[in-house]
Length: 125
Image (tube, rainbow, N blue to C red; front, top):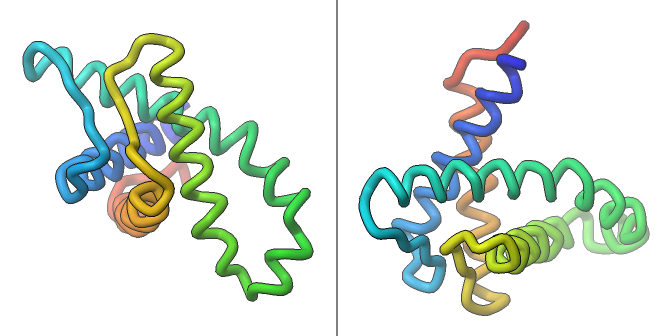
């Protein structure tokens, strides 16, 4: 359970950095509390997408991973971010990613920041 909370906080922090750096990734709300709640819910949704959908996509695109020496990961991460944006819209969260290339850059930012936060934040081990 502790690991789940740490990963969610890392996802929320990484998403916040991407939203701050890229003007085409938006998170809106009436006040700071509402934005924070939306960010946490989007982080949970993003974690769920990465847990359920990403392994299936990676398995189906395994030949492309080998062919591109792993660079297809950028595209897969972008697609996961775009799927999160779509799902957030479906459930009524004010989070939107505008365009594929923004999603690629956002996915890269989220990956780097999430990795750094997972190194710094405590883990179960």
